Length: 168
Image 1 (cartoon, rainbow, N blue to C red):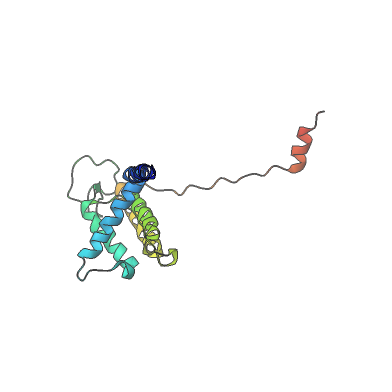
Image 2 (cartoon, rainbow, N blue to C red):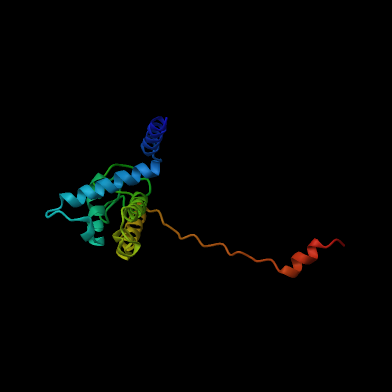
């Protein structure tokens, strides 16, 4: 009887690992892709020696697979959100895609035993790079990104609350 339970338990655990959320699947795929990228470097880079420079090189490498048209400064369509004709400007990875990718890789690094203090995906130079990509793409497409202002929370005066609760 215990062997049947063990069998059911094993089947149940294999089912739970087989049905990962979309985020978890993407994170696993991204982690494997980054690991393969490091292995393909000459010489290969062990994860323990990975730095933010390797991450930046990886992000630049990914640009060749991008689908977002980013107009160059000399392009007649530079700064136009909807250009009327095709041009030869390069395709790049969209800023939002890179930002999400870094978030997933940052989490995966720590899940695989890396400490938050040494996480190359959380390095300040990565944030600077992402901000530059965001600004460059916004200018190239003529779409200004405006930082949203935080709404101020107005705390009610306790005396006003107490007086409004009392019947008149």
